[in-house]
Length: 540
Image 1 (tube, one colour):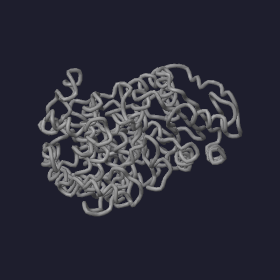
Image 2 (cartoon, rainbow, N blue to C red; image 1 turned 90 degrees about the vertical axis):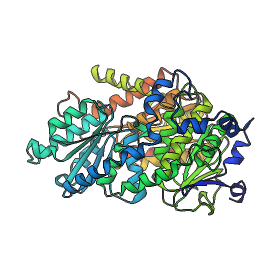
Image 3 (cartoon, rainbow, N blue to C red; image 1 turned 30 degrees about the vertical axis):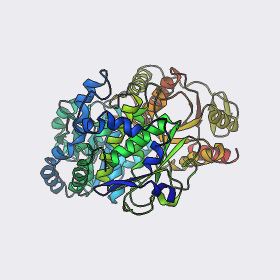
Image 4 (spheres, rainbow, N blue to C red; image 1 turned 135 degrees about the horizontal axis):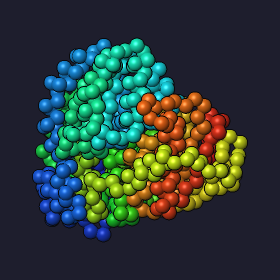
């Protein structure tokens, strides 16, 4: 790592970025100097909404509150203290939501070692298992900004019915819920009617930029996190954002932007083992949704460890992240990172958000839009309203139905050969089917290409935007599975299994209308099919 350290580190408030200068020097002209010459760091710190062009200005004006939301979030602290005391007997915290709210809270809990069950799935097996887990001492946090997200609504309904079936009165059942939503969303009235605790989030910051709002802080506080410390870290770091020097967030954003103009196509996010291992999926969503549009963006690849396949490679910018290594220590876990970001979690949230907004400026895209996410949602709704047409497989190989190729080995090769990178998308049970995650590292090792892995429907609200709006250079492998024991959704004419299948079909339709090459594998027996898939991948 001596080459990384030779360029020096840029540090502020305990957060340091190493290696940025060397990356900036690889671009045709210094990206950092161009940003500074245009006064961008100071303008962004002062919430100038014009930085991304007139088309983005209205959204930017409404969504730049993340720059100082840590001030407004302090108003939550007394309320959170009262809520935590009121619900002290409910010590099993379940977070129901998708996208930024779930990923931020999950990163906080994982980093600080607090137990939090994140339920951002529609898989009936995973949901059934969650409903059977310590229900009598469970508090359910429903985090849904617009208040009409299909996943959050279905999970809220399932838990409410479960509490009633447990013998709770409607009033007692309501006490098990905390609703976090945007001002004026339909979920406000729903929560009040249920007798739930309703917390309205900061209207000026939300979604993937809402980590330090009620969306991230409420479930974390209920799980036992001292969220005031996160706000302190962000506030201390915020003082560096507007400067031309000693500005780690500027260094990070300029380096990522420079990489994009110097021919890099992917960003590998590598935990360095020093305390922030849960941050990668949150960064992935932030980069994918903010930058992956208009044919632009860098593919974010979350790797398991510094030694995992895909952490380095041609066209891959390797970024190590961690928390406990100081500014003078060797960053990146001792292996070939080109950039390293070390510092406390509250500062990390703010630094990555600022850097992402800067990179969007370099690429000329609107960081606050997600124009292609709605297409998969719309296709899902159409599938739910129509007949159940799954389509016949083109081939059957053991426990795997293959759609779009011959044998299983042929399917894997076809998916890998379809583009410069491969996205593996699994609409399965994140716990019971966890073995399927091995595919990412195996296929990356066999192909030498960047390979990503995402759970559906989580991925629809994260990397799904990049899949449909980013550069048309990837291949897509979707994996679905048979459902042995489906689960109904109270008040809805469809089951969780039907919803999950519709979301997978909607994702396929959205990719197809953008001419993205996709192979679908359906597991008629999940355990046998996963074993077969892993074996076939290893044999490539």
